[in-house]
Image (cartoon, rainbow, N blue to C red; front, side, top):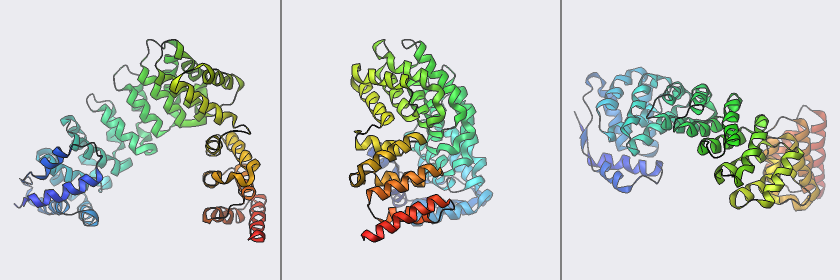
Amino acid sequence: MPLVTDGAWTAIVGAMVLSMPRRIPFAALLALATATVALPAQGKAAGVNELLARIAAAKGAERDVAAQELAALGGKAVPGLRRVLEDGEDAQRIVALFAIGKMGKAAEPLLPVMSKLWLAERLELTQAIQKSFVALGAVGVPELARCVGEFGIQSNACQTLAEIGPAGKPAVPALCKLLSSRTVSAHTAASTLGAIRDPAAIPFLVKAVTEGAENPRGCDEYKVANSAQALGRIGPAAAAAVPALVKVMQAEGVAATATMCDRAATALGDIGVRTEPVLAALRNVAKTGAGDVKRAAQESLDILECAVGSSDDAVARAIRHANFDLRLRGLQRAVERAANGRPFVASIVWCYEHTDDIAVRMAAVGALGAIGLQDEHVTRVLDAAAKHPDAKLAAAAQEVRARFERKG
């Protein structure tokens, strides 16, 4: 059975240095690079052994090609890869995990073995497992959902699901159960729900924030803070949370932590409810608060009011807001500034391309016309709008294009 040489492991560690976060100590990578180990015996799975050795020795595109060849073996590669995960050294496991991330559904039998390795609590291996799950995307979500309920690896599963994002939706019930618990990992579940952004999580997140509003001294401050942030990431659909968020923001002077309060203030701006009680509460905290809470309240107030004299940053944020009324308000401010609205062009292009709402698209085309800047991005929007099946939108875009042509 061939050995994986020092030179081969040096090659893979070089690739790992480029791909892994910088917080891994160099000494740990050096120790990995200098290990000389043999892949575990695999009998008929010699093809897997050879491909793993190629992956270890290669880098860049060559490494990806070897991993894809292994992935193409599908179920035939599973026994050999299982032996590497169960009996190999960490260096071998990391190579195998890189390949497993390319396998898609064929990797499903290996997922419980992968997640079990998190219990080893070794940084390089932990990160390699997470990267493999993220590469598999939706394929790994059922196993990750199971891990959310398993003590010792809950946080790893939550962090991985957060990186996967909306595709992690099937794990939401397990995450909500963890959020509702009193365990130390509950706050991690809140952050993950914010990354997935499934409205089904809103009642559970609202309950967590409400607990903070009713008992700011005795609540789990990290769970409340992360739940507030998650509600803000979900956006306008989380409007039911606004009363509790206002109370948490105002609890600064009681005994709540600044993190709870400033995340609640930020969430109010992200959700976008513009009622007078919300605006009044933000004005008061922006005037009487301190530190990050004062700053967060002022920023949310700026975006919700989006007044005539608002800063460029507030107008740009309004144009990109998930609330369509705020988008329209921001676009109107861009029109009012005409040629001085050039800092908003990128936001207007983004706004047009991230909505199907005809009123918002009409306003975006009008704002581009008022600003008068012509570049490839603006041209792309106007060309698309000119071909739109909505006659009014198409006519507006054609008129702006004609105006540009007359100037040009």
